[in-house]
Length: 146
Image (cartoon, rainbow, N blue to C red):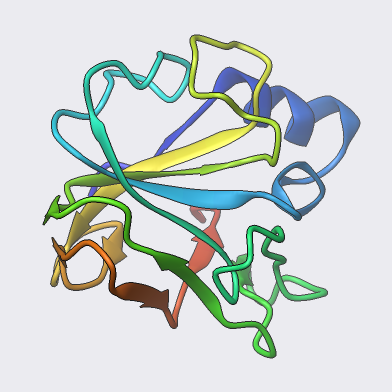
């Protein structure tokens, strides 16, 4: 597992707010291809397979109202899904704020991680077929205890 947080998210959590405040209303972009070395880096040559939003509408997704035991989960009443724009095998994702354009940034709040069926940061079927819909049923952000 290889969760990476951007400088912008770490700074927001330390000085101006929370991960929830920084990422609520954003989306999860799912990509095929090589992941950037850091969450600050530009997306580069990766292929955007799908953008996960509220009911595939483009409306931003929300976290639950409170964290429990150091874990912040997706809002249970929401369906996080996206129309698949390209066929491919998902390798990584970025949870970003609504205005994020994927370019190099040390101020944009981002969480970047791996995708696989099991044993990844986001466990979903990595097979994406254009025209279908992908749903994320379970998503959490946690801070380590040690």
